[in-house]
Length: 172
Length: 149
Image 1: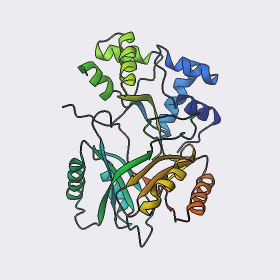
Image 2: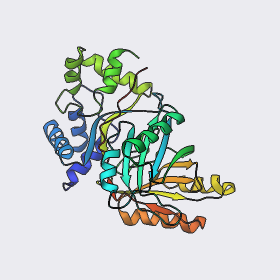
Image 3: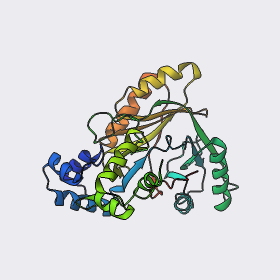
């Protein structure tokens, strides 16, 4: 992945509250960090191509749109298969995050995490079953952890000045 | 929500135009004026359908973060959860239905700072913290295809 310069970091920080709703938004952002409009656009392009910015666009509030259930599906996949399985799992349209994480034996045998979103709990479970069926993971130990209480939605995101409430977190 | 709103939500979750006047470009594609596009996004944001137009940063590209979890006795859950939430570095702190019942994300400037937060939580609560940093990331975030009913 590309090296992120200090100039890039300044821009990432400036953009974390969002692209301004103004006719020339990149000019507005540039004024905040001392760059001209062209440089802002060029740097953003570089950050996107370099894979630092994963997605650039409208960030919707799933909850507000009725996607109120999210289940963290966790799977105990053999180590030599986790990459192949993870890459497939990450492609399901309702999987919004898919990561390989360490096991903590004996209490935590799971090494693959996929966040599954749906309109209801039953729908989420159906989708997890579908993943298992399509990827032939019927024999793989798995669980789905639903959230019960939300104690904190999002604090300051690193790089952001101040707190952003009700913000889907960038790092999770 | 009208059809234009739906397209403004659905079609621009990725590849938001990187041109001097992006809202004019969007308007051109949807047959709307630049002002109408800006006003429509402002309304969608006011109604909380949109949190922002912005950048989703790949994990651990800027700063460091981890997912952490603890198995907290029911009668201590509120107290421990409040202590965990009190750290600025903690975002996303949830109770989940499992013996390991408290799940949170710690994000800070670097791995050492993340570790220091986990260490303080462990020391203060006397409950082990399971550290689950990302080893590999498989999801290409293409946004979220919405199903309109």
